[in-house]
Structure formats: structure tokens, C-alpha cells
Amino acid sequence: MNKVVWALVVLLSILHYDFWYWDDASLVFGFMPIGLFYQALISLAAGIVWAMAVKWSWPSHIEEWADQEDVADAGGGEG
Image: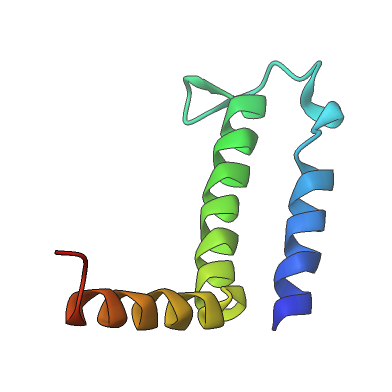
């Protein structure tokens, strides 16, 4: 799953440069320029990909290491 998340990050990085909407004056919902709407969708997709990265690609061994240190510190700190 880690490779899928990285592939999505690369894809979003490429799609972020929306040169095809630079000269388009179309409005979405009657008020929002299509380029801005596109960027809003890219932002939502980036948030979803970030959630996927946290769920499947986060280095949990670092979290476990930090939790072990907290338990050791709580047992007998300086005093």
C-alpha cells in the first residue's frame, strides 16, 4: 500500500499544474472559476491521500519507540 500512496502523491503533484484551465473563463456553480474549482478538488484529494499515508504508510515503529521511552521515564525520573 505504501507504493500506492507514493504513486498517488506523484500523480497529484503532476495534476496540480493545471495549465489547461489557465485561459478558461468558465464558471462552476455560476460563481467559481473552473481553475479554482479544480484546485479545490486537488486539495480535497491531497487530504484524502494524506489520510491514506497516515493510515498505511506511517512508521509505527517510531510511535512504539516513543511510547516505550514514556513508560521508562514515568517509572523513575530525576528527582
